[in-house]
Length: 101
Image 1 (cartoon, one colour):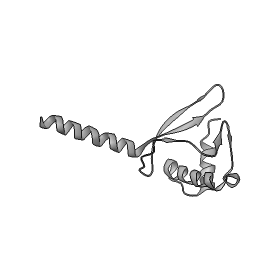
Image 2 (cartoon, one colour):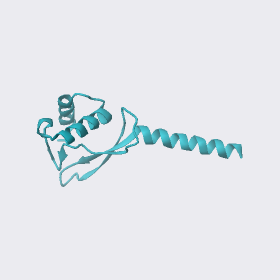
Image 3 (cartoon, one colour):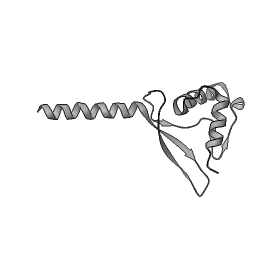
């Protein structure tokens, strides 16, 4: 009985750690690549699991300066959790450099 409880507590702990530190980022590709989810390790623990760049629509991405205040806040949170970058312009550069061409 004690082994079952220890296994349950261990499994529950592993699940909680994964939930807090693993996320899935939605990527958007062209008609050949399609779209999907990339797993990543979060830089800050959060209960949110699914992430999407609020500046990204299809293959086009809006610049930080063109976003409204709500989307700017969402972009800052996204960059902080996804990449650990707190400067929106540096985050834009990183995203652009990482794009599949």
